[in-house]
Image (tube, rainbow, N blue to C red; front, side, top):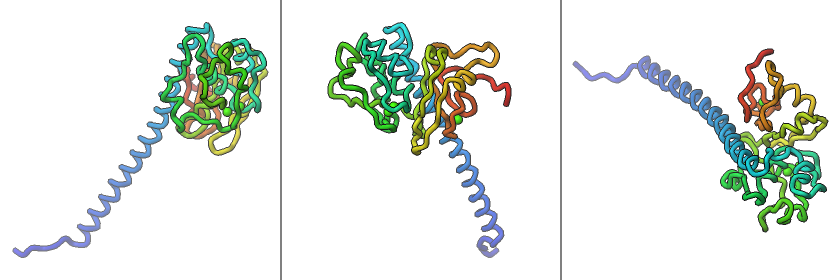
Length: 234
Ligand SMILES: [Ca+2]
Ligand SMILES: [Ca+2]
Ligand SMILES: [Ca+2]
């Protein structure tokens, strides 16, 4: 019996199997990655939900979703978003930064994470509003009107329920890629109303546009602070 090498066919079969395995692994890994981004987005929402709950315990209401209402709440009625961009999340983050009533409430690791905390529309809050008798923002910290962004670089959207019920608001969300998306009251009210009960999420609505970067007002692939509605019309 003489030793023989592999035939060409045998080698080709082995190579084909290796290529197939690599392809399968690649596909399943990319699935894992997008799943882990969704999980990350949901985890950030859960963190903010618990921060909001702490604020709510002390102040009796969820953080206002616009700077005018936040100004009224802290006794500085002149407060407003200088550029009408990213308004909801900015007001919420600013409220959670207040040291009043045993704040700040915002999760420190989240707030200190430069990949999660940005200021895409480059705006600031008035210095006088940061004083101890108003917002009481920690001395020496930035006066930026920060947003918290999802794993795809887009700001979360936040609307408190009073603002949602009142309607009449409209502002722009600045996306991570420089694009913009309009948020308006009528569309928000239509989409955030439960298709069967007709009620809004309790207290506030906080959502990510999801992997597609398109605002579905909490439907589609969006990631939400409330239990997502079963789709009735899709
Ligand atoms: Ca802004
Ligand atoms: Ca901003
Ligand atoms: Ca979406």
